[in-house]
Length: 351
Length: 287
Image (cartoon, rainbow over all chains, first blue to last red; front, side, top):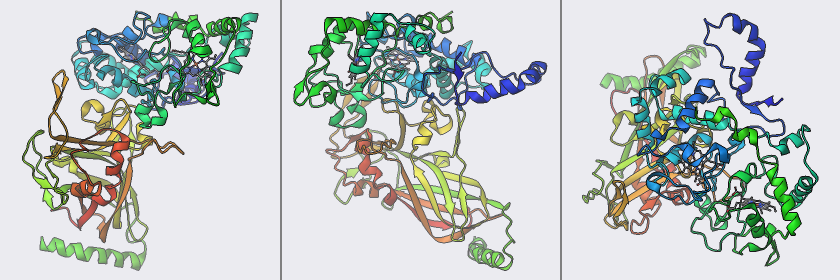
């Protein structure tokens, strides 16, 4: 149903098509091309940005990445795994019990762990966009004092001393010694495959399903009121904006990266896919429900020099006024972005 | 040695003669090696690395800032050589999870890292070298890489604002405004230290907030050297840290902790003054 990615993977694809027959006959002599797992770009999605050329997906690499994702060995005191903060049932966001994430020794992070999904299509990661390649994301989690509190070097040493990992890295990458780039590649193979594109909305877009009247009204409203920022099939334009949560900025947001006051309190426009499952909301976990979010857009915004101009009329903060019915319609639409197949896909389960 | 010196003078002439005569005496297949030696100095003084926190101040700027150096290094990449007759050599850059060929991590105190041997250099005469200090966008955006770019194996990497640190200078300064900080888990910052981490690689069109501190530098040999079979010339590059600190008019009382692209810019802007060819040898038997 989905067409395959044009990046990197297409080599594999051509190989499969052209060489399928010969491949079967000489499987023992050549190391067989791994065909069991293919990154597929949903037809309505943009081109992926991930560097598949450097790190082609294989079943062994993916399985290894999954094992690492669920392994608390990655943290200093063996208490926290990636999965502690990124849970499949929540579209890989954190448990609502942890508004901002909780790492080793129960230390509190300052930011709300985002949902993971469609990472292959993103140019920048984190609320402030400080990380520009998916491979580099785990280094931050592993080495953050408030997340896993470990050093990359030590994780690599622990993996090399482990009874299973050396064999698994050898199988996935053909290496005798585990080094950090291979570990990061394995994790990326797992996370990059997290494509969420099977929601009811997607079925509607691909003409495989329908939305009800309320949802369609919500969609129409959304296009007028929200798609200035939550645009495209990923429901974000990946820009950094201030949507009026604060007047002072302990967490500088994008300004941490750009070192410019013009970016104070700006955070990446998040995707809204699966957002029904990822409460609480915003970088600082300010809101518990989607109703609260829309109340905020409707009249709860506070002004500051970097508040997005879309929310202002001259000097006046106007936000996005919505009637009660409009709010319900928008929320009904947002719920169609929930991807049940994604959150119950056994591929991503620890088993 | 004398013979070698003689050879050093005679060879270029010989080679030019040969190439003038026939135009084909040196086949393009002919290759040799070329060595670049990075000699880090403060003014004319050699550097002896001090322990972090040491108060023996080995150096002084003309502005009267007393300091020492405890750690110094930089990434060199995309090395090329060129010559007056159109000779061009480009060092191969090949990166993946196992290696980062063409990227060099020069670290003071580790002499092997300071000598870069270029192989398969086409025979000919050369009078210029060009190289990049730092890891540019195309390197960063390849994702996780091995070799000298592996952050778990000595690679210099910023996590929070992902990218490689082009250059690090650390030491103690008499006037440093740095106070003692205990970061917990056994990590601390000692009083009177300074730490300049120069990084930043982003080019964002029309947005001067993003500072790209990766610099490409061309150094002139001031003469020509010949590469060919049995010839292995060397360029002795002096890296003068004093030029960097003085060029940036560093005042350690206010500038002692630089860990962001904007803070590093004033230092990166000095780099083309900091690197220069002191001399070249036609043979590599000495520095």
